[in-house]
Amino acid sequence: NQPFVIDFKNMDPAGVSHDVDIRQTDGTTVVVDQQTTDGGQESQYQYQGLPAGTYTFICSIHPSIMHGTLTVK
Image 1 (cartoon, rainbow, N blue to C red):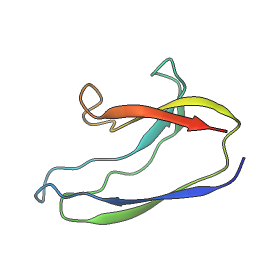
Image 2 (cartoon, one colour):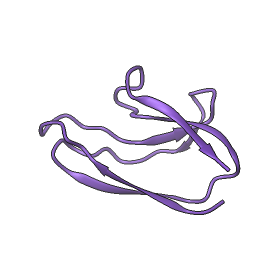
Image 3 (cartoon, helix red, strand yellow):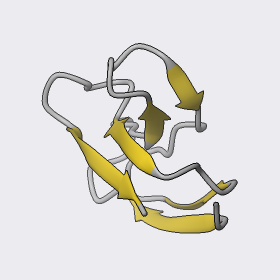
Image 4 (cartoon, rainbow, N blue to C red):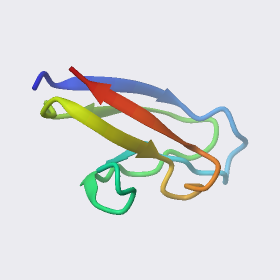
């Protein structure tokens, strides 16, 4: 339940956007929806504290190839 920040740097060229959204493990229920960051730009994605558990994080633009698991203890 502690707030956290992801310092995100999109190293793709301009015009290729990404984001870091957090979803429940079902992959469809959105917990936090972030704005996209254009290629060559940086963002600080701020998140409120999350209850302990396992979540999925994705790039909502490229979810089939850019995803992972976030474990909150």
